[in-house]
Image 1: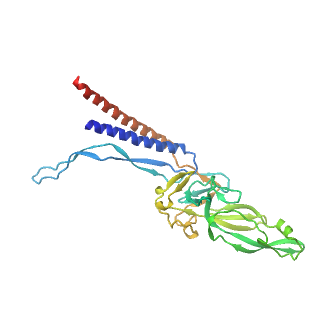
Image 2: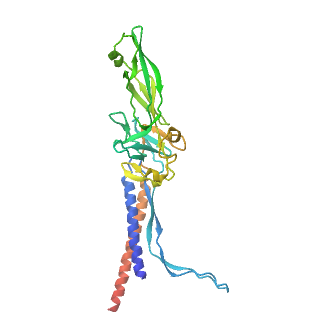
Image 3: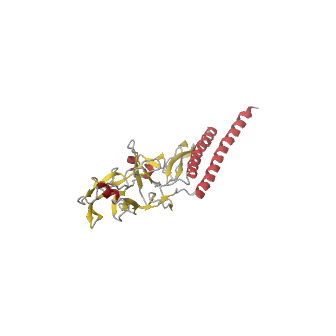
Length: 328
C-alpha cells in the first residue's frame, strides 16, 4: 500500500507542477501585453491515510499518543491573479489612457451590450469619434457635453457667441465629437447679412481634445473655446481576483467580484481620483506587471519539483520490480 501511495504522490506532483509551469508560461508569454496581470499558483497537501489515531494522556502519568499518518500527495490550492500596479509608459497618443492606482476602465460591446473591465488603456477614436478598445468596444463614462452658438454680424464680420453650455449628464459610450450647424446647435442671427452656408463654413469646429487626471474630456474648438464633452469613469471591486479573464485584456463576471458602488456607473461613485480610485494618465499605457527575472526563477523551481516527482515514480517502479523478482 505504501508503494501505491508513493506512486499516487508522484503522479499528483506531476499534475500540479505541470499546471504551475503552464501558469508561468502564460505570464512570460504576456510580458509585453499592455495591462496584463500575472498569476501565481499555490498548493496544498491532500488528505492523509491515518495509520494510528491520536489519543489523550490516560491520566496515570503516561503521555498522550500522537497521530501517525501518511500524506497522499499535493494538489493545486489556487491560481491567484496579481493586480499590482504595472509601469506606466508614455506613448504621446492622447486617446491612450493608464490608471495610476486602483480601478478598471469599463467597456461595452456595442453589438450585444456585454460589459467588461480592463486595465489596458490602448484606446483609439473610431470613425464616429467613439473612444474604443482595439477590438471596438466602447469606453464608458459621462457623456452629452456640448455648447450652442449664435452667429451675428458686427461691422460686416461674422462673430460667434456662445449661448449655452450643457455639461455631461448621462452615462454611456464616450464620444469625443463636436459639430454644430445652422439648425443644430447654431443659430444664424445675422439678419440676412450672411447665408446659412457662409455661417456654417466659418463656424467653431472641433480642433483637439485633452483628458485630465480626473478623467474630464475637454475639446478645444477652432476659435479657442473649450467645451467639456465627457468624463471617463472607473470601477473597482471588493475582490478583483473573482474577475474572469475573457481574452483581449478584458475581465468579465463583474457581479461576482463585488463592484464597489454597484454595477451602475455614476459621477458620484466612479470618478477617477475619488472613493479610492486611481487617477487617469492620458498619453500613456500601463505595461504588464510580470517580473521576468522572478518568473524564470520560479520556473526553475517548478522544473526541479517536477523532476523530483518523476523520480518518485521511477523509484517506486524499481521497488515494485524488485518485489516481483523476489520469487526468482
